[in-house]
Amino acid sequence: MSPVVKAGPVKGDPVKAGPVKAGAATGRGGSTKVPRPAKAPTLRHERTFKERGVRLVAGVDEVGRGALAGPVSVGIAVVDLERQRPLAGVRDSKLLSPAERERLDPLVRRWSVASAVGHASAQEIDSHGIIAALRLAGTRAWQEILAAGVTPDMVLLDGSHNWLSPAGQASLFDEPVLEAVCDAPVHTKIKADMQCLSVAAASVIAKVERDRMMRELHAEYPDFGWDINKGYATVLHRNVLRVAGPTPYHRVSWRLLGGELLDGGQDNGLDGDVGDDGDEAAATED
Image (tube, rainbow, N blue to C red; front, side, top):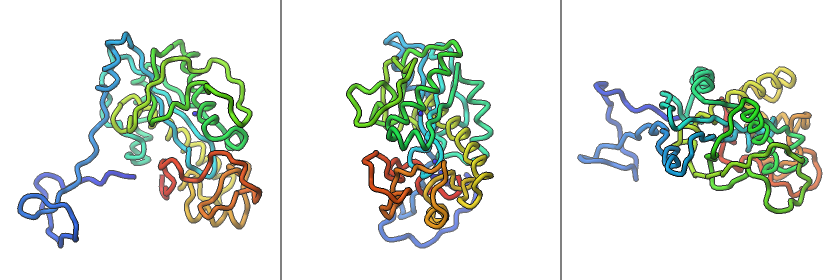
């Protein structure tokens, strides 16, 4: 079931020369290379599955995995390979400003054949572990897709590990019994959120919905700065947490960067080190 691309100089604008730092990449004539903006994701990879008889592809991505507080959320955006056209402006949610994500959210939902976001709470993360919680959040989103009358032919999942399909072996922890689990074939792809439009679209709607939830929780616990850090381990968040202690929305089984558990107890072995997903562990604004 949260980095910003810096724009290069506009063509025609004067570029002020400055000292070249040691080790900096240089082009012809010794000029520094300007980083290129990330390429827009496309449906090119999704369309490679058409020859296998696939028409409806469900792009899936998660947000909130590395946060100290709040839910983990999984977005699904379904595309029809027979008639879907690209949607301009969509990128992995981490490359978009909050305003850009808010603008794109309704566009993505209208563009998709079906879309949904599922969540698993901090308590569910503590009880079942982060992988089972991801599966729970993803299954909740999947159930919404099925309830809308859409049955995807396959799933395209960001990353290298299929955490969405039912566990193939017994877990060390009690996992919730789920109905209507995802039984479609799941294909994983590293950096799919950067390259595949269906997955990037899923990341946008998941990020927007989770951010709204964290802003609502901020009104209840304003000292932690959740309206800004969205539950991630910023200095302010950790400092207030050490003084005030955890709220019902904190993942108390997780360790702070210093190593102590949020509930002051012993490590229960759950797979929940803070910031272990590279998502937005150092987030300060979004």
